[in-house]
Figure 1 (cartoon, one colour):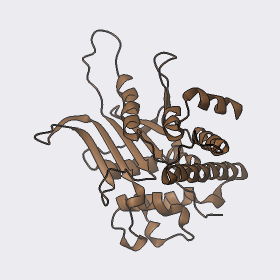
Figure 2 (tube, rainbow, N blue to C red):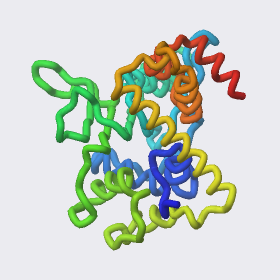
Figure 3 (cartoon, rainbow, N blue to C red):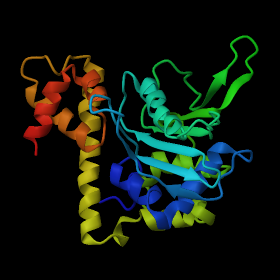
Figure 4 (tube, rainbow, N blue to C red):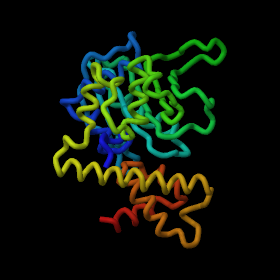
Length: 288
């Protein structure tokens, strides 16, 4: 068994960053991304499930959804597998945090608080620079390259591109990137992660500290992660239409079930498998 949890598992990520006693870890991580200008002092966890305005409208379920003391919103997502329309999904998710700010009554002047959407990716964008792994995106004037609107920010981290080892780490920002990529591979408690917030991270991430129920939940989440990753990697590498190919029905069912268990939305599973929404719903209902 690994000594430390994998931060890309659903259970591992929410155990470290999604529990009230550990929110100092989330605050520290966000501040390394945002810099001095947008520093967060405190966070409140919000309901991560957002329903459409009508039963026919699509809902959204965030990994983490928070607000700070100024009322700014933070959507934090770990993305475990490639998705054809991942960027579209990020923009769509951000609209929930924008629209919910609308105040009732005629006196509201449309003033909005900032919304930050942060994607921590366990894959690489197909169209991105080979070395660039940190993307910070705002609405910008095409000609002048000046920021046109600074209250909507998207940050994407392509973790597989970060290749520094422990001895090469020079900042807490790099230590966070290293932890996402390598924490579950560590066999010992490294000196480079002894100081400050990383001592807390190591303590919370050590599997031996968990009770029997917590360890079982983590192992189930880890199995879902590897099953889904293996199935999707095969799908992309071989370029097969998994949902349509003869003899692939069981593999398709496995991809759908694992995807749903990981919280991946139905639209994304449709894009990955070629199945219709109704077919995915039938598999979902059959697995209960």
